[in-house]
Length: 538
Image 1 (tube, rainbow, N blue to C red):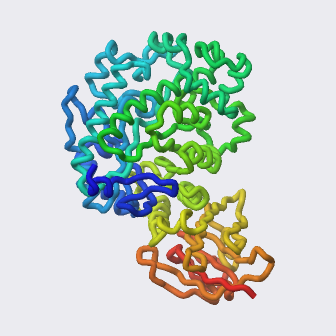
Image 2 (cartoon, rainbow, N blue to C red):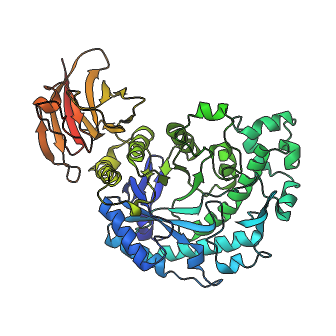
Image 3 (cartoon, rainbow, N blue to C red):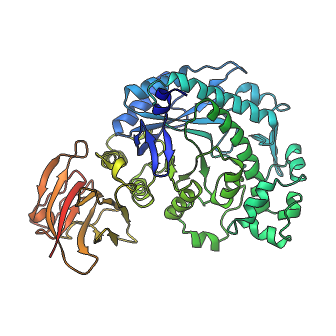
């Protein structure tokens, strides 16, 4: 590899993602599934992403369009994506929709779909063969790997400026409708010996559901799947995880040999389609069963198996729409060697609050709301998301957060309208609302607190008031508060008086805050959302 090529390839380190040799925070925007299927669609969707202020676009590259005839590749759309991304000042993360997308095989080429003998389908107990390639099909695996290898080989030469910074392999893999594949190939594998790597992964992971079955079966180190783990849904999920991860590893290795980009796999989570069920409640209710969500996908129940079977994968990444957000962040960060990337999440104000939380509390290397190209102009969702991109992309954020400076985040809701954050020598009492408490709070309220190396405290967010205190019991005062322009970092205003509660509070109004209809004294309800405060002790 030439020196020039190696310097333009993004790479993961213990502290995060480096792009062009510098820390890079992915403020991503994933476009809809069909928004990269034509040159016109790419131009329109990428323009929308750039207008919102994201720095990275996540866009599908589909096997069906890339290899319409076996062995004949059409890179025209890939080249358009690179060119438009460069023109719009965006980095690009291709999403490889290969053998599976959302637990179906709808994006495989026609020549694969029409040859079920060569490319066998998975079977479920109730439905027989389904529109889903069996992960036990060797020709399916090699064809998928060949196509992904061709894609990365092309990116190596076509992406002269290093616009492409990572790549996703497949999309939300796993089997729906049954806990395991019942095809003849799968049945043969189920009756065969369990690979030693799987036994070791389960034996070393007492939190895996399959571990308890292994202990009850006698803690044996060799045997068939049923002999070692029993014939149950937990054993089936481990069996399918090994199959999908093994397929993915072959695909990843083929691509990595051509172009060593960071690679990740995303997960459809094992959470019910309802709002924010805490982990304790989910466990108490019995949760969902493999097959209700894609069995074998990289959820935390089988992370050790994925780690053993797919070592070329750098990140296991959650698609987060439901569930206990903090727990999901922690488990996937642990599974990815201390690095968190969220390629899909809500684009709503709640999703924005979660973006701040992931970056501030978990040092995420990137976040990416889904479907941003269909946001209606002028809506609260659009204003909130564009504002978040500006604040989180403000000068120095990627370089300063986590690795070099302490950072914390908070997220206030109607159920938890206040909190206390400790960072450095200070403690901050934070509540939703405004200085005078005369306007009803707007939820969610959220923010990120950063202690730059140069001193003081930098605060970004919306809809809160905070009071600083010294953690050693002494009193903390405010020397000055500067409102900053997120684009330039320059001082927009120096705040005092009403805007700081007489010099005792720090506040950032909600993005759509309105003056109180009953309070006769007007107050400023707009601001950039980014402040720097210098504190002192007395």
